[in-house]
Image (tube, rainbow, N blue to C red; front, side, top):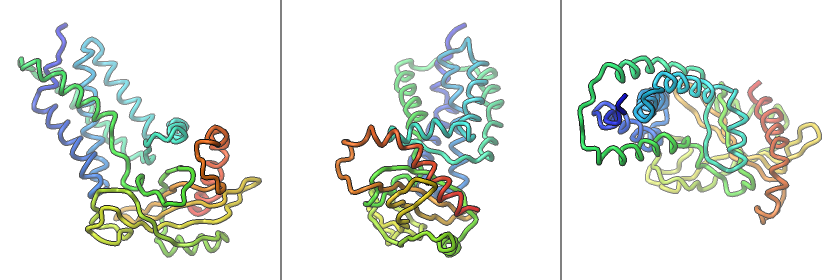
Length: 284
């Protein structure tokens, strides 16, 4: 069977690739809402299997099956150990477990029908390789969440996660008070060059190094383990609110690389302390 590489030059595929890139690297940073989140899922699930089916036409059914299974795995809590491992390696990949994202799977039958029922005319093969490279980069270099680049200056070790919450900012403060957490409200510069227009955490609509509000919880104790400082934040949303974990401080050590190997072994301990000893208690 002749390879259908010309599918990569079809206007439908190119339009989907353009929308995916635009949404991941511009619209999400500007709006970060449900629409931009779901748009990436739909566009990605439409063109991702087309890309691999073009390269592996004899395995197109397997490509679509594997695409569905991988998407379900990534969007579920089953992938959390893999996400945690990436966090240890300081690879900026994260996601929020949201099973409503699985609605994106509904686009796969349309993508498969498009693949099988569309005639792909001959095009200049010289463009196939550049488009393939751009597509591969687009699939790998998906955007990090807007909150991922918020890192208060005091953070010694990065551990960034986002949790849904029903609380308003005032209710969050009241909950932390009731749990006996000793915290202070502070601000810090965040190196993020996207202009945010609608967030309460930003001092000015024209700031490119925006000021973020965060909460530093001191001396967090859970079972036999202690963190000197934990840095979290809060972002209100139209549909749901979020608590964000930025990172923590264990001691005053400034030579981060010197004790990195030692810290890697303790990562799961600190992760459990943060998740179970702080976040789960707050969300109860």
